[in-house]
Length: 493
Ligand code: AMP
Ligand code: ZN
Image 1 (cartoon, rainbow, N blue to C red):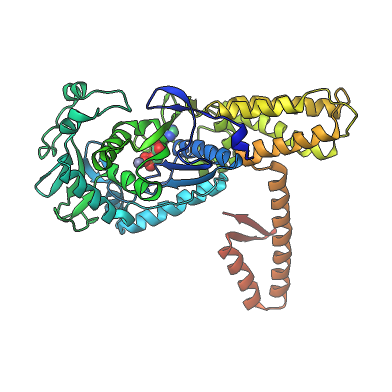
Image 2: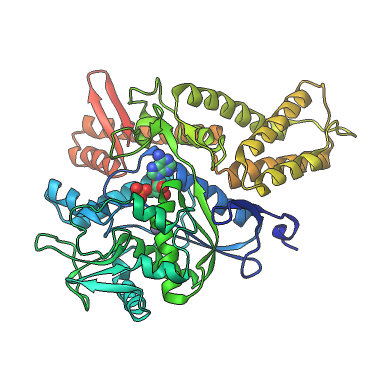
């Protein structure tokens, strides 16, 4: 029997507006798609929060023994500056400003994205497809939607006919909007004159002569609409109907609404059983966002180099800070919040690191099995990590009491406690043990000091080839040696 047979998860489904029992389409298997980043700039901490929520969810499913296919795409084309199909392509614009190729922009920020997520100890998704790698699939979907009479071609561009679609299926089902209200509230923007109605959205856009990111299609040399890529990639890797689709709250409309309409218009079936939306990280009372300049970069958290914080924080402390809020709650980024999380994080780590030295007795003064199920209950209740963490601190209190002799635990219960603390703290919440990372950085320092010593000896022997080789190869490994009158120190990047 797998753990998932014993733990019944409830998921808040945006589609129904309620918590629902989670039952995957195929027993023991889960298909999950999460909209990935548009790789035109460094990810900010707000983006990280959304991806972290789904990393935690992925980790919990895996812990329960599910076989999960987790698809998180890379948006490397088609995302325009304005969601209403106008403005420049975000990546093409960056390429123009920096005088580099769009694919250089994509490469640079994809690498940055991976580096940052690695620092936060994310698990890689099972598949990470790119939009530009799936142009053919997108063109095929457009052909089907045109064949089904739900899209039209104007001047080389193809638009989804929202009004026609809405005659048979409700457009707005996810974001609880209705087309009549949308018609009243949408203003026609310049450059949208090709559309029959301003609510319609682009499936394919003809590229202007200066537009560098372009592909041939039956309608024009152009590029696919942003919403279409997620329909193409989720269907390709997870099927016409799959279990979970996630993303940030701000993607509900129009992006996810359009995904539903496109999939329905192609396959005549609701594509997703559970729509999950993570709430926003805010700072100074406003959503953290690149476009407004109201953001903080993860590397600034790690270095402390930002006016919003008074010191550097480790990735695990920042991760702990974010998981102390429920993924559907707004989280306010503050230095005080991080300081409090850091204190809590070290208290938790101290307790975990003392587990091996606890003495056991004939009786336990607290019921470890009940406590363990409370941790599962919290996760099963729509991944309620703040309650899980409150339960972990309840265990910390007991561990400290056992240490000072005011509480007792049996050997059997201690084993359950150790396994569960490790499972929840490291496997599910994805935190890293502070002492272990300190220990590994101590080991690194020791090794580099030996190399610095060898380099000094090489220089003393006038073996400059060897001394340069040591310096250059360390630099390649990301370790810079800094020579001064007082000796040589090193920094890592
Ligand atoms: P983007 O690269 O702009 O497509 O955004 C990538 C992901 O980050 C999306 O799921 C967004 O919903 C999410 N996101 C953007 N801003 C924030 C924020 N301030 N807090 C949480 N998630 C965000
Ligand atoms: Zn998407």
